[in-house]
Length: 488
Image (cartoon, rainbow, N blue to C red; front, side, top):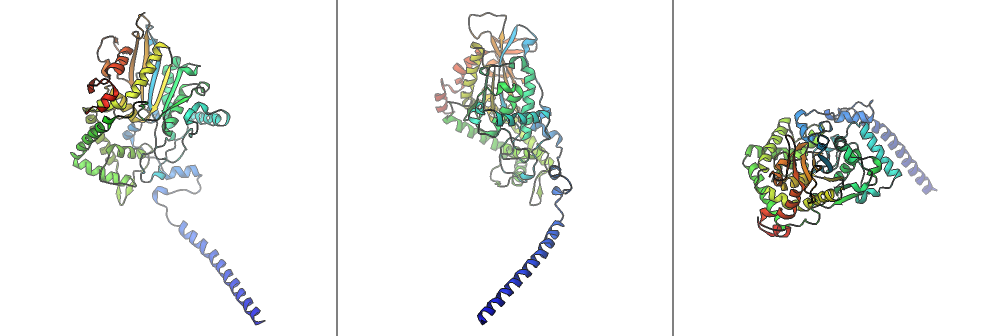
């Protein structure tokens, strides 16, 4: 009996302690909550709790206007028609036969982890075209087969609306490609009024950002029913090397070019010291042993292109003057980089497979009158290598901004009836709205060219001869294998 009473007393004591503990916790938690909620939020996170979540997010990352610095970002409102156009409309002696377009993907997140990346707002206020585009994508996702996307049918069709993601396309990038597609559609509309999917070829590298860019661009260029009939094709290489990717000499050329760039930076000690400082502030996992100014610019653009506050770390903050100094240095360096004696050789080896593919499509346009439109969705280096191979070397062509375009327009001369196929066909090259045909190495001779007061056309025959016969002359070689095995 005494044992039962002692057990009962112990149980009552436990229950009493449990009740006291619950009462104490009920008092403590609200006190702690109010204490924490009374702490002032940091300035960059000051919010009004009465606002909805979207307004709250915008208050957190209020936009900063970087004025002139944003030119490098190529925002959608800056994308407009340049020298592109069907010049045959001005003169019935010429008929446009087709266009080949290489684009760089649109705006993306940084390639490296940067400080405060979660607070950078990469969204945009969607316009009617953007809304129509996302509705179209939702419709094809739920109501249509995605087989026309080929190897990309499992990829997300467009990026999320808010935060930046490492190397991924942003909604601004989508908007850029929609604007670019609409701009070029207005130029080439008669040519692109096609209903046969055989008239169109779409290539993309195997990255999400280039696929999504290609899809947005082609949506703006073609009618949805035609787009859904075209099968996307994939390139394993960002340089579109196809079957000509392995080349021994490429690495040695790249090393020599990088060494020249490093020497230029080392010769400007004040700039080098500043860049190391910026590097350590901007990058989360930073090492000041070697700083790449171009990679650093890429990271800084994440803030500049999205109007985000420049980062601080350990009482050291990046200023707008620092950014201007970085960009000015790169402008200075690009002028020298474009003049490097080995750059064209490097571009020739990197772009040989790409040049062959372009030549194949040029020949089809001449002999079969199709394809009418070829798109290659690529990267800044894709354009840089190809332009270097063709001898178009300057600071602008060596640093293509987001949503850059390189256009090859193919024309037929209707006034000549030649027995030699291809001799009555011409092309011109337009980079970001500027006609650069006269700068193409194999187009500089006037032999066979079409010249007027404002138009200069290069014979298709010159391009085919260069790619098939003269491509490796500078290497004292006759083919790709020899050029890749010869010391440069």
